[in-house]
Image (cartoon, rainbow over all chains, first blue to last red; front, top):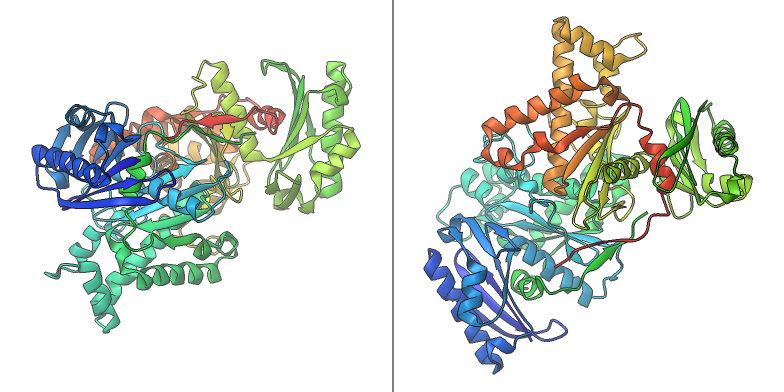
Length: 313
Length: 313
């Protein structure tokens, strides 16, 4: 049995999975705010899911945690997890000592990428070493996790997949990162709340409903979102040439209106560019199935998957 | 001894290299136009360089050829090599039968990426399996070759590194690919000749001289070039997070004015963005040393380098 935890801005999910990755037990707790709350909630979630399985935590084959912010996977530290109220935390060491077992810490988007890759494997996706996949997270921000040859490609400093801060419009608005016209400014949860302020608990849902009802401003914001998600897919394929781009994160719960909209943009662009048409982007994009706990499942595998290999020449 | 050939639009270079990759002999011939000319020149170049080495071609440890256009490395075919006048050619089979030895065919940018990676290795670059590098080719077009864990990352359909067709300006000019505002339209040899028409045999050199002399239109075109090469570097780091981006291709013969200009843009952007500053892009970009036959040397290794591996988790 492996245990994986996904620490989110509001909820913390924990899963216990069997040898095939099937979910045995699942727990959801409120995360709380600040280092102590985050730590206590994670400990609580791991203990509860182990108790449900009737196994002491120390007997789990692995325990991993996915967390937002900048993560040093070697030292298990987290910094700049703004939504959690965590500036810096030795999360790995603290959890390991509280739980009596080594705990691997992974960035939440990368953990989700591993979880989605695992799902593709169980669906019979070939485990060939020349296969690759990107998980595109549409949450508060926009970022991707890249899986190459069965393992995470983190890059030289852990910034692989930070495509939300690729500028795509010199006339675009200023980004908090200091650049102008970043992808994230048009295709993310924060992009929606900035352009379409609402008290609705699910702003993306509300936006799409208003657009469907004919609100012109909503149609514009929705169209910017779909356009720029499509551009994010294009960036991932033209750079890494991943087989698949699988979209997840809070906004992905929109379901069909989101994926259909993205595919429409990609298909329309293909009619104007034989080059783009040859890439068949609309066929290479998918949604994470609703309710699938990608990051928690991926966290359970983080740090324990065997070394993969790429065919080189 | 290995033999590598680089078939360019005007010249075909062949090298014979020793076990350490040192150049033993080098031959340069005019390429000619059309399938027959390209094929005959490549055969001639291989035979001549083998003759210089005093070894029959069939005794070479490997023979590889880098060629522009769309290359199927498995079947050794080349299509859409427009500058060579080649629409489609079974280059691998034809060369193999003419030379009596298996000949591996590789895209020229990917071959150059392998050649540059080899150069970095001889300079003591760590052969760690979590290292990666991009070769950014500024030729007629703009494209990159990506080396991960010591081997080429071609992607699922061989389009990895085709970043020249990432649009970065919705208000930019129309690209022959059918999209608008592609990177290649601003940062390539064709971008210079379109924006700065000249009879000078080296348009990039001429452009930089005119800009240095104060010509305002030249300053504008030069600044667009440097800006967009810097953007190409940013795309490669924010997506793959390569350790290094090494710049080559015809325009790289500009030398210091090019690399200094690119570093200036990257350094200036870093002053406006703490996020970009943390990536230290200006320190991660280099030029291929002048006269280094990257593609010919890389072609000699193409198809023969041992399988590499990436650390995964």
